[in-house]
Image (cartoon, rainbow, N blue to C red):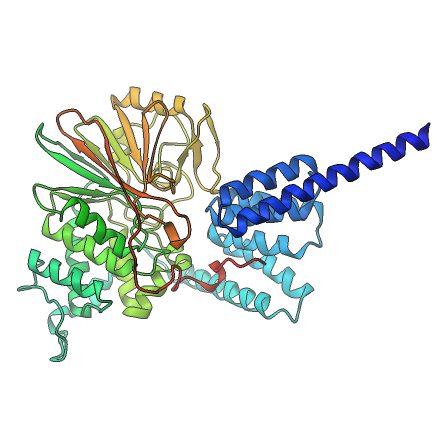
Length: 491
């Protein structure tokens, strides 16, 4: 009987293994079609059938990387290596996850392992060398950093004596000021893939830094009954989709105010055009055009996802340093009529945070790894009550009960946030109390999502959703300027 029982058990395991392989193949098919949500679903089902297969964890890790769930990707890569410490792809996945999270030393350790095992792997050696360079650069920056002695890039600029060459026929500021005519000319200039003169770019940056630095961390505005505001989510360097928003909804003006809710740059390869356009409108209509900081208006993200590389390619490293200074002055949240709170990420890792706490945040810095400033830029809602570890590996996920308590304590009606791709361009969760808006359609030229923006009217503050689809753009791929370590291949 023992032999028969053993045979039956082995047969069942074999059948289970076959079932898992079929599920994995189904997941692979969805992955190739860039349907990462279904890929994750079927990798998960394969793991439920066979939870001791390192390949399934590694494959799901890559799918999580593609959906920017870096925390989950890191956990899966780690699990794959727990199952099989010799599984080289697991080290690749874990290194990529740590790179995405800005954990460069941890990534370097895994790249070292890959190079040791595969000394002739050119791709592995390139990634190791690139990561090593970043680790050394970060160490050097820490060694010379001193808040007391650090000077602004503005102090080293002599903008007045910058010469605009005779052969430059593009837009110029009028007496050093942004005008509506200049904005229209600049948008058309950018549309034709032409570069703004560096003097004009520096003028915009220096002036917008001055404007932003005078704003509080929590901006509070009042809409009259007859007024409305348009709230846009992530634009991520998709300049031609930004132009489409203005075409559909009208150019910004004193009677057509906008709020752009962070993540203006990175990934899309026209980030410079997006951010200079937004900064230009901020200068033109300082009280009617609002910008909030996203998690991508930070040095680590810009270094990995393209904005730093794009600015250096189109202008200079010095100009990127100035962008970095300006980004640190972007406000973190905005409150409309004391009833609607808007931030890029979401709510907080702990209860008890008040609007007054937000007003007191010293934001002129790179975001910390935890605390209210980090949460405002990074957190995400979840359907279940309570809080859980972030799928991104930063901040947390918060449930409907967390939202309800926060709103009640601060006498607010609902929150509006961005930060996540949504198939319809927006999503309403937590019984209508948490709204997500995302304004980069067909994100990274591959997600197939719609974009959306929201109208809020002073009369009732009831959100009206407007969807739109992606428009054609020049044949420049997303991530064209990104760090080579973030070009996620199948390794």
